[in-house]
Length: 306
Ligand code: AMP
Ligand code: MG
Ligand code: MG
Image (cartoon, rainbow, N blue to C red; front, side, top):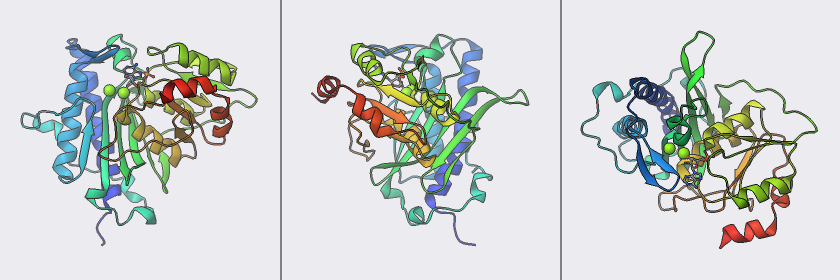
């Protein structure tokens, strides 16, 4: 049997690792001591962010020692990691699928893995748990190609918590159920806790029939995937590469598009700036992305480009 190509192993491993990270996030919330640290203005970190990152980075670097891994919480202590947090298994269901031809020869040096161990920290600290996600995405030659969004507080039909959504360009996406987007409407989803005048101005200009304000880049892309919103509109700097790598890869594997407010894709190589300075515009499959981009006022585009 031929060996499993690297991108397939990274995907299968990320699915298993994200499940464990989600458990860590739930356990820390249940224990009650969040250990909140203020990293900057409107930017919090909790023990769950730190521990989930330790689990993810320790597990990935153990299996893929030569892949560059960039995590939101900086350098993690990889020495004192509890044994049960080091995940070595691969999700076997995922491995039933065939690697896209275009990715079959990728080697470790072509890849960067972007990790947001807990997206939606602001909401997590306030007990708003549905939008909390774990994001593990990877790029190949600068482009977001594959990833997972794990939702630790999603309640499954068997009453257990957690689900993992995946996407790989050239293969497709899975782990969620979609419904058709409402015709004749434009439902926009945007930030709940990081709004400002530019964000508002862009939202007004696209003339949505409804605006949903929720936390998390991962969760907003989930809303696009599941048919609950047509466009994710965030005309502000603030999101970082670890917020958009996995969501972009999954959304685009599903037929949608995620770019900055000018309409350009972000780059995800190892030496790029972390900040997505030019905001985020993402649209679900079958939604006209360029028409949303064309409605963003030039003065908003100009201010973010400065
Ligand atoms: P939101 O849509 O506000 O939940 O933001 C999505 C992601 O981008 C989260 O990881 C936020 O922490 C991050 N983010 C967005 N805007 C800002 C900001 N102004 N300062 C810090 N982080 C931000
Ligand atoms: Mg985040
Ligand atoms: Mg985070």
